[in-house]
Image (tube, rainbow, N blue to C red; front, top):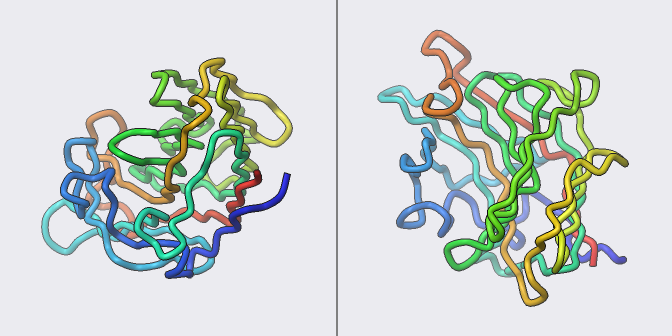
Length: 216
């Protein structure tokens, strides 16, 4: 397989910042999905995604990058393998994710993470309504840990790996003609399913996507 996409999170050719069709009216908020996000149109050089508490109200100024609408317009296809190295956040309320989206769905979540479940990664294929909550153990998955992820998006099965460990194979896949745009972001939980940040806690949350490549 060859690398067909190598993320440069400071590139305006690869990414559109702060605007996505996965949020109502293209954003900047998505309260219906239990997020305190107020998207900001800023790229993320070095792969550092941040959320900053607003001075008024509960909303947080958050980073979201998508290939949808960019000049390159890159889309992941069935059969591709996504590989990422991430540094997980430490602050309660942080909600990082790498995922795909197109035409109101086509969502495959490479990972989601919430520091209140410190050793747990979430993997989902929303096309088939399959998901897995994978406990990596404190030595592999923990706030501040560096984690190697790979996801093989097959027509008949999506497979998620941490390092060389197969964590989940859904045996459903996405179909042979599937394609979707990439999204990388940091959301903030509103407290419905995961704790929101404490009012007295840090004013800034962050995580880092050190690398993200797609092989085909």
